[in-house]
Image (tube, rainbow, N blue to C red; front, side, top):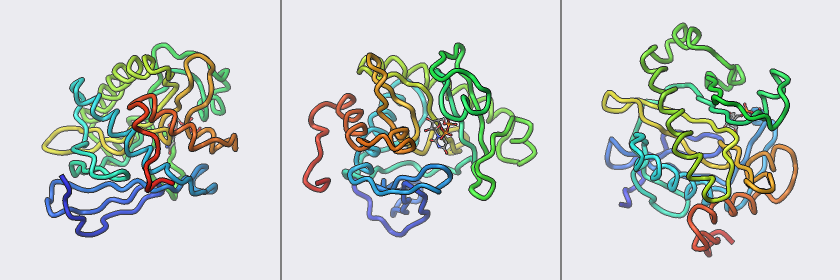
Length: 246
Ligand code: UDP
């Protein structure tokens, strides 16, 4: 399916959303721009958009097959996918299997410590406020989601974890943590946004090598090689960059 992009609806840090001639569908274009630390650190990473598009498409398909409703409809080109239009809920739902990043900074837990059961966190998506962590009472006060919707997002987030952990482990990847965003469509809560090395922490299951955006955050180098390696492990050597990526 190749719907005609009728006009830009929204431009974020890493993606642009375009309307299509079908009001229920939008086109998501994955940019090569990388940002971290609330946009204070920026760079362009050639080929990142393609990797994130194809990695997200693969993981959305795996989730759909496991019964998780996602917005994914079809890949529409190397850097773009067609998705169902959602009424987005302004929350980030983070699931953590291993202590890392802000959890380590905030609670002083040892980095790398296994978290069993997984930890779920909610953040309010608001750039001006720096995406503060919120609890379900705050979510109600903000009018962002109903209690039943919060329950459903948490249930789906744990289900995503349950499905993706073994899928990734079989491909030599440890799922440390990840961030999801949800929206409403047809009276249901549906998984939206992306699932990529920008929004997940992936580690090599044997060596612990960092294969995600932490390479960019921490200036470790080899950012695009890591993203390409994740893509290669998910879809095989056919994922090597094509002409448009060079
Ligand atoms: N994350 C994200 N977007 C954000 C914040 C976090 O995708 O705006 C992801 C991040 O990549 C990691 C998980 O959510 O996989 C947990 O992130 P953490 O709170 O540790 O954030 P950090 O402060 O390390 O960016």
